[in-house]
Image 1 (cartoon, rainbow, N blue to C red):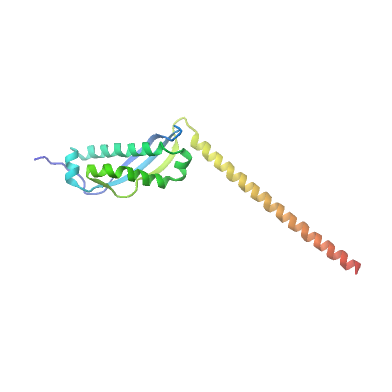
Image 2 (image 1 turned 90 degrees about the vertical axis):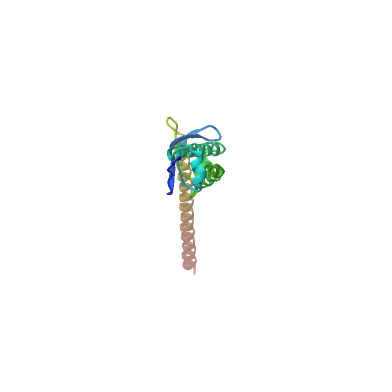
Length: 169
């Protein structure tokens, strides 16, 4: 009799500081979290000898999905649409999960995206966005100040015209 102990509770797979590349081969690091449960214990117990082996295999499945999906997009898009990528990761692994007797509980989450060691691409993207926001703010403030000054001049002009008309009368 072979006995394999597998949990009936939910379990998670963490990819911490997983190195990835975008469409342009720009390196970055991601943290990904996935939640699973064993849907078919017979299938799962036939595929692996232990729960540790199952987790290891599932980690490889998640890594493959993350790597292939992120490599199809630019880093800026990845940063802006993290939830979309989580859904894509989940859809990509679901077929493989059935083969292992496992099911995902919710969408795989792309928790964090940051620069790889020695890279400053994300920092530069953030600096670019911050400078764009600063520019937009300064342009808006200048336009508002101009409109306010023009309104003040127009009001002063009307008062001067009214004063001159009153004096003439």
